[in-house]
Image 1 (cartoon, rainbow, N blue to C red):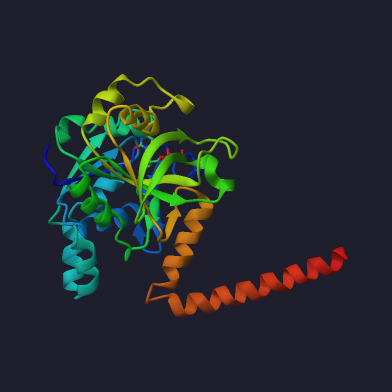
Image 2 (cartoon, helix red, strand yellow; image 1 turned 45 degrees about the horizontal axis):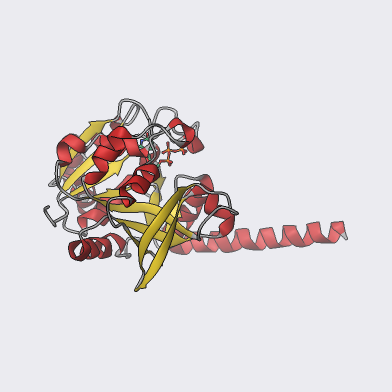
Length: 302
Ligand code: UTP
């Protein structure tokens, strides 16, 4: 098998129900975090890894993703005329990349979305990024996973230690700690209860997968929520192949969820040169106001 990861897959075919009504007719992946749609952060993470082929899995009401990564001749010309060099550079920085779009005809789950790329990936290993898991741009998670893959030649799942109160939201692993953040996975459970979770190590939205996953996905019957679950396929794959986990210690935001999205927005705004100073002042004012409000409430309850 080819050892080089040349393709990155961005499943974006989900319904985004946690963000309704905003996602009724526009994609969750296009929700901005400060001034960039969340999918652009994931695309730029991959650009930093020297991968050149981008496959985005879209669905109904997702056309604006294609428009976003297309060149925008009229806008570019206008910015040129107005001599807005920085903005021009900003909106053209993806123009040289190759994007392919595959439409998932129905949102039948992440596993189903990944199966849609089978005819285009053939026998290559590939990276998968869930763009609603937003990672700080300075992190090197995907780069590290690619390096590991080149050594191990087995699927690698990004892991994060999550509080047990949140464990029911994730796929969770049981594994042997091999040191340096590497785990050999022995079992995987999708969204377990706190009591049934085998660990606090949750799978987050960065994967290196190999084409063996496709034949398993093809045979899988819908699992939890009537969807074809990637975790179910990975559990099947474990019977035939070693799967590793790689612990991410950096900052990730679950921006597919309202609270995570708001946290990402605040943290990215605090790092944005244009607004950070005024925004942090505003946050301090709000914190002060909330503190006074709480103090007042505590007093009236005494
Ligand atoms: P989520 O579990 O976040 O589902 O999917 P969702 O539909 O996007 O959002 P909610 O839960 O209804 O609010 C994780 C990733 O898998 C993709 C999503 O687009 C997201 O990037 N996905 C999910 C698909 O591509 N197709 C699907 O059928 C389901």
